[in-house]
Each structure stands twice: as structure tokens, then as C-alpha cells.
Length: 475
Ligand code: ARG
Image 1 (cartoon, helix red, strand yellow):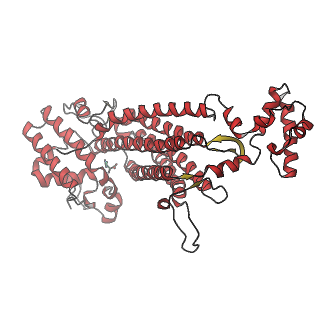
Image 2 (cartoon, helix red, strand yellow):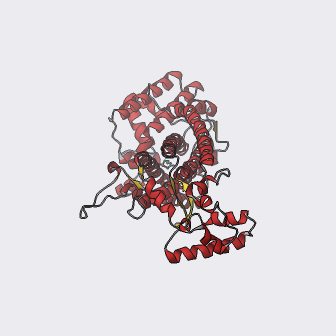
Image 3 (cartoon, helix red, strand yellow):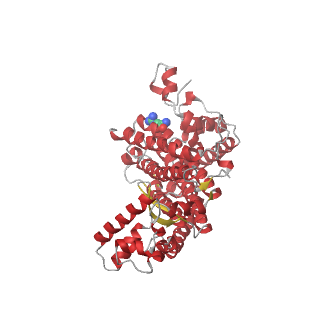
């Protein structure tokens, strides 16, 4: 098969090496972006007079036809055409003949592939922000449906202090807000046009890069052609934000696994999002929560993989960079899929407030409050801590909770305990008193709810401004 770059070659390609070097089996996913970029380039070639207006129109019309054929599934990619750029060019040639050969004027595959990747990443940023926002809405809805449910809060997975379940849900909403913020921020670096850098040094043709940037709705152009074709920071950033989201999703998955266990029993997953066992008839397994936890690994792998690919590369383009794509595509699918499943799990999860409460009634989660109580009565906190420690040991020995002690028993440990001791140690009091900003009291949680909602409203606005930018159509 004659290669588009075959002019200086006498031998034909080694067929194993040809397949080894080809990227079409995965970069076919860039097809719509490749066509979109080429339409902008062809338009610019006509506007600047680099090709005639008529040729430019032929190129654009032909590319649109290829786009439509692609949409109808009528395009078959060939490994012998190596990558998406040359496959599209072959289809364009089929559509409009020899004039197709003018499309690649003032362009290299190096700035072309970088452009495709920018278009792809910015579209994924929008999808990720959208999915993060849906998951946040599911978390917020759970928080709202159960405003009074009290559960133990943990450190070291040992019961620490009681918290509102809503507070716990909103902690995750905050993590995903940071991820959405990071995604929206990386847009600035993703939405810059490399095209016009040529192979590495720019071009002798009088191109108009700003025009191409406007047509593709990029915010600007790369200022240095070497940087334009060598840069994959925007991919690294996307992978890194995805990795951070996967950490959050994995922690959520882990908690769902714990919560749905017989030992915790805090939550039940919908049947639709659980699986059974082939041998043990009683099982209802939280497979999807586990799978999300497990899938985080491949996203971290892609991030480390690309960091490693890039770290020793001399400027400018090197074929190594072709290795950026599979990790990027896999990460996109893994992230969006995990967000979707997590969203469905949270939205349909039934919580069991009575089980949460029972867990919070045991394990001395009000011990800090007993110490705070004494400290507020003038006992130095260190001393108060010691006294309550002894009280706890006393209860552990008898297998009872602090609230089972009578006032007289409390007073044997410290005369500072007064008539309001029991009241001060009730779960509702303990939770209600943590009304510091960001704390777990109902009023603090209500405030957090209002704040996360306004952050989400900002995301919503960002989405309505940016969604149209990433739309691709061949009309
Ligand atoms: N398939 C290549 C990639 O993904 C496209 C760029 C090829 N450029 C080149 N000079 N061989 O990186």
C-alpha cells in the first residue's frame, strides 16, 4: 500500500512493524475531532488565499461528507493508513479526488494530533464536570432526605464522635466540588490551539492561526511552535484530576462496602446495583462499589504511565507521544463510568438511621463532651481527659455506656459533674453543640448545604457556557 509519506522510500513496510506502529485501532476515537480541526484548517487556507476559495469549499464539503459517513457508521479504518489523520485523508480523497491532497498544506500530523487531543480533552472536561455535578446532587439529596440521622464519626475506623449522616454526605460533595473546580481550571490550558506549529518550527505559508482558533472556539493559540507540538501537560492534568476523583470515588466505594456489611448495616444498596453469589444463596454483594475502588488503579497507572513516557523526551514531537492516547481514553471511560455508577448507587441507597444511631449510642462517642463539660466547669482539660478516661474504663469493665451511670457515680469521679451531666451527653446535644463553621450541628450542616448549593450553581452556569463550545456537528 502506498504511504502518504512514501516518497523517499524504496522498500515497502514490514507488516508486523506497520501494525505495531499504527495508532488507528485506538485513535479512531479522535475521528470527529480530526475532521472538525481539518474543516477549520481548510476554511483558513481559503480565507488566506493559500488555496483557492473553490478548493477550500471542496475540502470543507468533502470533510463534512466524511463526518456524515462516520456518523452513519460507514467508515472502515485501515491499519495500513496508520493513524486517524491519514485514514480521514484517504476518505476525503475518495470523496473529492486529488484536491484532497491540498488539505495538508501548512500542517503536520504533529500539530494536527495535538489539536485533536485538545478538542477531545476539552469535551471530556465538560462531560466530567457534568457527571461530578450529578453525583454531588445525589449526595446533597441524601443529605436533605435525612437531616436528623446521627451516625458515629470515625478516626482509625474506631468510633470517635457522633456526626450527622448529612454531614458525611456533604464531605463527599465538597471533594467532588474540588474535582469539578480543578477540571474547570484545566480548561484554560486545554482550550489553546497548537495548530499552525507545523512539524515543529512554524510554516512558510501566510496562515492565520487566530482565525482557526476562533473557528474551533479556542481561547488562544500556543505562543511557541516547539511547545505546541511537544506539550501534553493538558493530558497530564486531566489524568491527574481524574486520579484525584478516583481517589474520592474509591474512598466512597470503600465506605459503601463497609456500610452495607452485616457488621455496619448502615445502608442497603438497591437490588439493581448489587450482585449475588454463584454458590452462597444469601449473598448480596456490593460489587459496583468494589469495582469503582478497584478501577482507580488503572487511572493512577495511566497518569504514571504518561509522566514516564514524557519525562525523557527531547523537543519536539517523538513517536513515544502516541502512547498518550490509550491511557487518556481508558481514563475518560473509567472516570465517567465510575461517576455514573456512584451516582446511581447514592441516589438509590436506602440508609438505616436506627442502625446508625445504635452504633453511635455505643463506643463512648460522647467522651470528648464529658471532658469538655468538665473543662467548661473549670477543670483543666488535661485533668478532665484523665477523669473521663477513668470513667470510660469503669464502664468498659461493666459493659455499659456513660449515659447508664447515675449522677452519683459520675460524681465519684469528679464533683464538677452537675445535674445537667446526662443532658450534656445525649447524642442530640453532643451533635447540636458542634455549631462551629463547618461542624456537624444541624445549623452548621444547613449552612454547608446552602454553600455547596451555590458552588454547584456556579458549576451549572459554567456548564451552560461551555457545553456549546464542545459540540461537534457536520451541518
Ligand atoms: N499517530 C501519531 C500520534 O498519535 C500522530 C502523529 C504522527 N506524527 C509523526 N511525525 N509520526 O502521535
